Image (tube, rainbow, N blue to C red; front, side, top):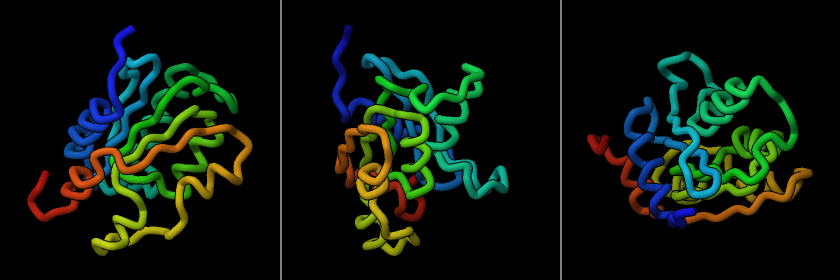
Length: 151
């Protein structure tokens, strides 16, 4: 098995983010292999829940025609920005083993992006799954997505 770094997968998430209608990209990984990629389509789909993370989780569960509270055990979700409370809760419900993000909620608020000021870690801690959370991977590159004309 090839071992790849968090930075490697975050670069893929950054590329996905550029395809979306908002600068959020996500990549689902298992055993150092990309399983699915996605990005935000909330505006295009007129769906407030169509965040990059949720789009990836939906694709995965629909492809497997399964809903299980542990369907994503052993999987890591990479995302350019810290999952919002909705996406963090979906990670708990799906049983993802690890969440790795770039820019934090605090980083986004600091640049003027409207966010719910509740960390992913706080949601995970109150959940019923053991999920490892790692933040700050290529955070500055992820924040650069919010600069005018970047994508």
